[in-house]
Image (tube, rainbow, N blue to C red):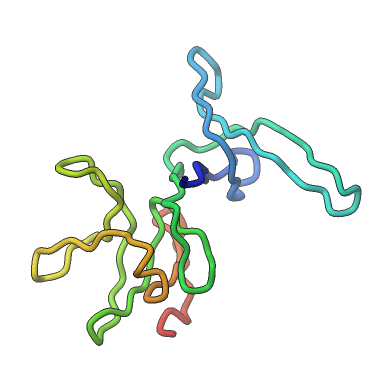
Length: 139
């Protein structure tokens, strides 16, 4: 079974947090993330609720790139396929058969689905929410 996990930026720190998404109706900050922190010094888990920027919310696809980095909706990925390197954004497609796809579509109009057999061919290089991209995307 696929792990259900979300990622978003915390409003108070602009840092990425991972956890379970919570939507609270009639709250000042409606969108929150339940986060489980592990303190390596005390060796204890701490649970907290963090206010998040909803525009940065993305769900884990259940896949990892060739370095073991978890791939989330909204990630930018560099993909080696058919002898060429292309850059895409991971998006959720509602129409037809709902699935995660790589966008934009290649010139042949066939979309590329996010599949586990492609994990060794791609690398997470950033997100649509961060302006920076790792420059070593060619390997």
